Length: 198
Image (cartoon, rainbow, N blue to C red; front, side, top):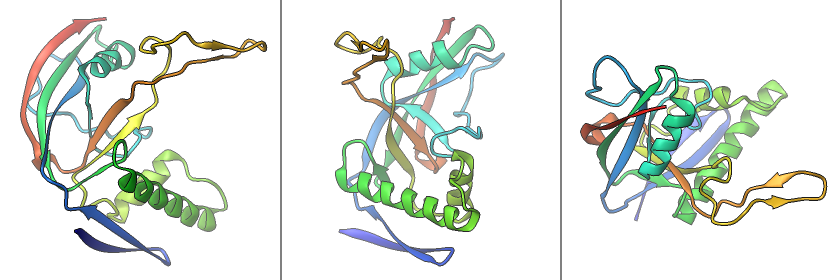
């Protein structure tokens, strides 16, 4: 059964839904640079280059949380990993649910086309996410699970493909899954897991 929601965006009506999923309870991991104190709750990301806008970002696998720390949380020389539990039945799973994926993709395409018609150019990632936030398009969604694209061949099962022109292509069979949480009320049992030196 689907719960229907209608949003008016510009001159376009978007028909959106959130599946009446069974409650999903999943353990996830949050990576931050080390601070003078342990976090009591995850840090919300406000960066302009955040994939899915302002949200609390988590990794599905600890291996990816560690990679993120070693490669992106280097400022203090140490990073910390926290774990917690998410519990919700109101989410979009763009990784494993084909219906959710195509719905999500169509919505992003429609929003981008709306911005292009108004501005005559493609939106930046920030402009796209600001448009979504300002119009409350995902306001009924607790989180979106999506596949981030891994870089490098560290976690590939096969050697990179080397072409005659010198280009190298990595084949990543393993999904690197992130979760962007919009509703902080679904975050439970947030706790410190470990600290690593870079």
